[in-house]
View 1 (cartoon, rainbow over the protein chains, first blue to last red):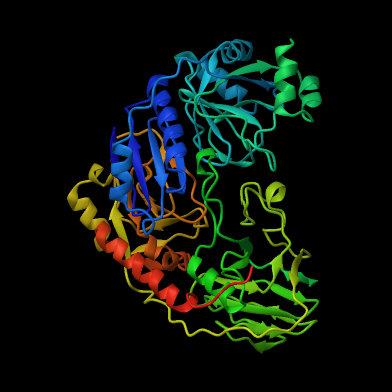
View 2 (view 1 turned 90 degrees about the vertical axis):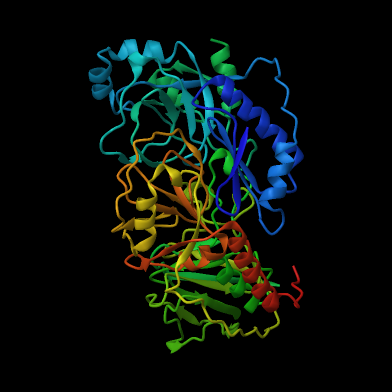
Length: 234
Length: 314
């Protein structure tokens, strides 16, 4: 573990290199430990692939004191529990999957083959970021990897499920974006009133599940819990 | 108490409602938000005897026109937008009593980018995650009141008695002074000659700058072949995208990014940077952490001499 300053009001805790479930598990464990024990001393914690970014008011607590407190913490124990698997329905129809031509060309696979691959594995939620509720999921097999659009879209539709390189992600709101769009989920991704605000946390796994246009339409009024029940009963 | 209605007759160019924002929710990607010039927003609330974290209007380059249906106590701080109260010049940095039926019209900013308009009372406004600050990626769903549109109505619970406001003599820091920065975690990705080049020139703020960040033009290109995965970023972080021209993240900064973090603007200089406008030139000066903290302490002490002795009734 290495701690470095990020300006005068944040610091970064480095917990490993590269992208792996093991390093990211360590990030999740440290994130929980720091949020639990330093809640009244810090402003926020951002967990990424292999770091934590901790914001603080330097006139309330100094970088040196905060660094020392974290340095002296014990390594949080590994918990042997099964991670949560969240089912995410996706309609891969051409009306939602705006980049199928490009995806088929780059992967040299048919749409059906790509969908079969995309729905056949659990993807880890490595981090949330970019915009509220955007989830970074990995990792795609090499045969599904497609580079980003050369010209990002100005408005990616809400709920779009997309791929870029080894990552796949879900857009919770209408924002600019350069990932290749495969389809769209009817699942609510960002709550206005209820907690949790996002159904996902780093360390969860996501299993995409193909739904038809008519199922998509029926699901648009459901909560994410109801969608879980409906997909589990399949 | 009664409900004051304020009609938005003209929205201005991105007029938003801001308060202290949403610190604590960055883990799910929510920007901190809040005023680009926090001190000016606090001063505006102080002038009308509001709690300092009460919502205010943040006006950006071109201000709104407002019609007050009842009397109100109003103050404007920050950049000068040539505000007019019933077609007469309106004083800045003063709590001003406004009669029922009055119109406040803000023009175009000429000595900064943003001004703050406070109204005494309790703002009746939809919040998201405890804050009324406009959530610009989801404004319609989450903070529909906070991105001003023509025809909107602001509602503020005000007291029946007409109260007098405060006045303040305020001198902005020298706008030409350099923006001070701390070395960022990836500054060493760049050669010392390149770092010196970056610090020795003036950078022009691009027209495509906004509350998320300022893009800088005419920057000597900074190239690195080193790749990194996304890491945490915050307001003040200076990122160097692969195209080589820098981005300084501002109040609505995203929470993560995969570009080298060249430097970080010190907290004491963020408000001053928040008053810069597209086309303005800025220079950076590298300082150490002890200096950054001393400057922040001096700023807070200055605010405390203004606000400190007064009680704020909730």
